[in-house]
Image 1 (tube, rainbow, N blue to C red):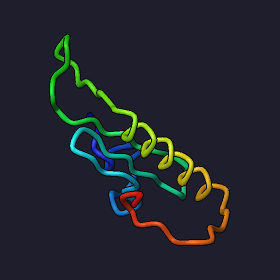
Image 2: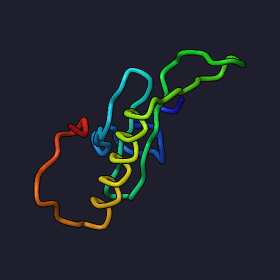
Image 3: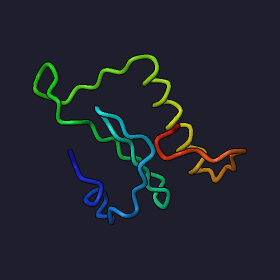
Image 4: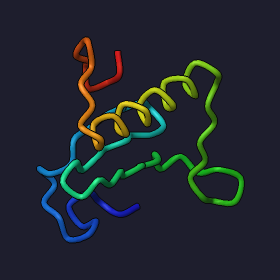
Length: 86
């Protein structure tokens, strides 16, 4: 998987962690309105990384994507969220 510092040739400091779990991490770059979805090295059925999410993890993932979208659109929230989505 490509490291954030190599994605589009950008510095790693430009990527902000939005959600970090054992199996994956989501980072965003607000300057370029881009997201980086990194999957752990755990091999799946064909030697490729696999990601299995339960309902709670899926909800957290959707919540993280909505937070990223609000950030890209510069929407103001009534409360401030922690970087891990908690």
